Amino acid sequence: MTRLGYQIPNFSYPGGAPDQLFPTVVRQAHEAEASGFDTVLVMDHFYQLAMIGSPDQPMLECYTLLSALAQHTQKVRLSALVTGNTYRNPSLLAKEVTALDVVSGGRGQLGIGAGWYEFEHASLGFEFDTFTERFEKLEESLQIVTGMLKGENPSLEGKHYTVHEAMNHPAPLSRIPVMIGGGGEKKTLRLVAKYADESNLICAPDEIPRKLEALAGHCSDLGRNRDEITVSVQANACIAPTHEQAAAEFDAFVAEHPEAGQRRAVVLLGDSDEVAAGVQALLDRGVDGVTVNLIANGHIEGRVSQLGEALAPLIS
Image 1 (spheres, one colour):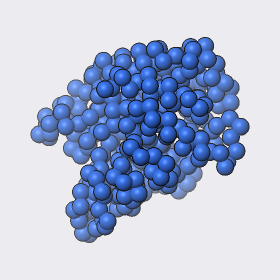
Image 2 (cartoon, rainbow, N blue to C red; image 1 turned 180 degrees about the horizontal axis):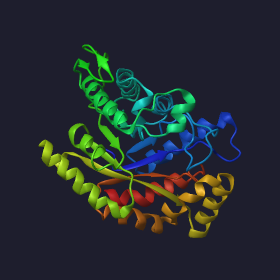
Image 3 (tube, rainbow, N blue to C red; image 1 turned 135 degrees about the vertical axis):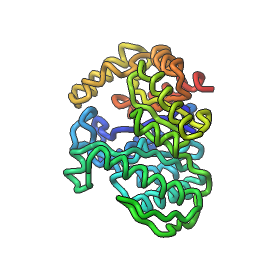
């Protein structure tokens, strides 16, 4: 399960030529693996998110990228944070995650959510549907995907998806953990209780206890042991040897990507001690782990290593 995950959410690296994009990503994955992260995660989007940058900024397809990173890493688990269910037929998704597990030697992980980025759907032709329909699709998809990943041959005549004795050969090399992302207390956390091994919360720190209480309630209703589920929370950081340097690097990123300025209030910014204290405060609210990104400066050599070295002792 993910207890200390490093997320790579953007590929807009200053002065980076296209042929240097992937090497920069590989270096981040290497630093994450060497410094104590247990999982490397990338977003499953085709356009950059509005709160990070503009939609025309670089974005690599996640399963192609994860499979490539599998050849450059040895220990870390590899996952989307998280796959938009609306982008792929569930049987195709099961095959893609299985292929990731096989090519990584058993390190694949499924991170999944209902999908939410309406502009991306409209531009690229993916069906967006209503909020209710997206969650109906997600639950049907989970029935198909989890069955195929377990070596079953699921059949479903659903409202949105139909499969008949869906086969998945070769089978995954490992038992693939299922992470559901989001913090919706009525729908998302109920699906976590019913289908998932892990919940990745996206919420304000003071909301964490309420989310955990809601998850426990769903587990009780469904007869699920709450202790079987690992709960992580998503965090944003900007770390550097000094607070002043971290602030300067974040400000430099915002100067190039003004859309990201609104994130400053939620970024754990500073030196190793400051960022570690911020993450410890999240852990103290009851979660088991964190997934952290370095939107502003993860591309700078040594920053991911510094982050992992600061946070790994908190998780051990």
